[in-house]
Image (tube, rainbow, N blue to C red; front, top):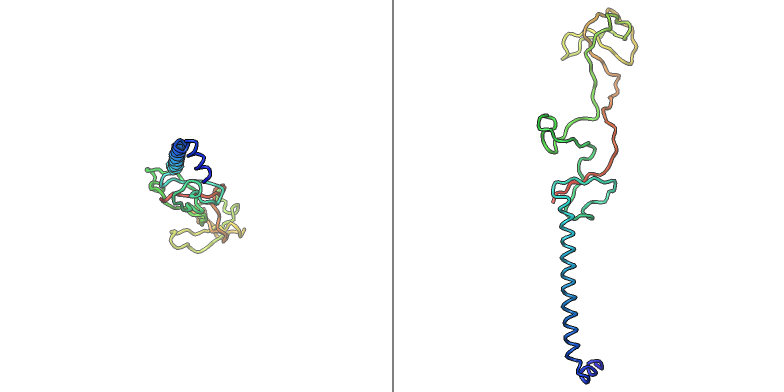
Length: 177
């Protein structure tokens, strides 16, 4: 109150009113501009990763906290492969396939007719594989009996081989909205 009395007595009250109004107006404009710039920065972040974009990181932090938008973990346990419209296995976006384990079978014959050198053993016909009269058991080391040089089926040793390529893990995030 004392300051207002001084301003009125000295005739500066009106000047102070104008200065205060000018400062308030400028402050409001600055606040508006800062808000506009913040919104633009946030929009630019989302533009960098549009809906459908994949973000890869070694941090488990959701990119939503960095860029905004809605994100979901993507591709867990899978390796991405580029689309190839000429290959039925890779012709659709987000198509999945493959397996980490396979039962390996091979149709082979004895080398130079010598069945003793590769461990053939007589086995019954394998259903669904035609009239094969020999089966190789890679783990048995059995001696052949009555073997002939014909096409054979490889019998597994019970363990499933792996076909996992060399890899390094990370988080894949897909922007969904």
